[in-house]
Amino acid sequence: VLDPVWGLLAEAGVPVVAHCGSGPVPGKYTGPGPMREVLARHPRLRLVVAHLGMPEYAEFLDLVADYPEVRLDTTMAWTGFAEEFAPFPRAELPR
Image (cartoon, rainbow, N blue to C red; front, side, top):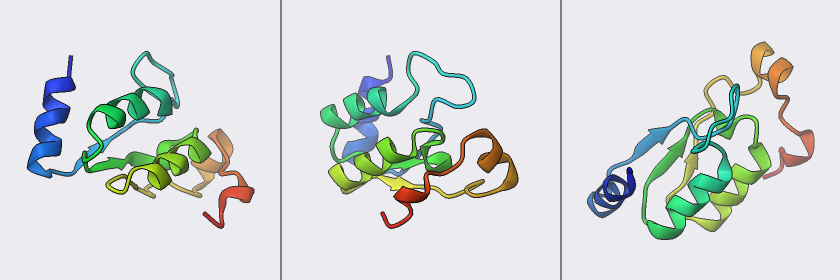
């Protein structure tokens, strides 16, 4: 449904902040898989993934490595709530 909008945003170079992670409640369009599909069609989309993509941190870090216009927002990262709900994997800290 939003594919034409993603395309227009990519063409315009407008940054978009999106809650892409599947937490706290997964949905059909949440998680790294659906966002990877969007980025495959619109690789120039300037996407800012809110909350490091909680809880799929590693997968969203992979998107950052694969798509130069993708960034991760660190809001709520490493807070008591985030660490209780979806602890950041310490092995991913060097990334």
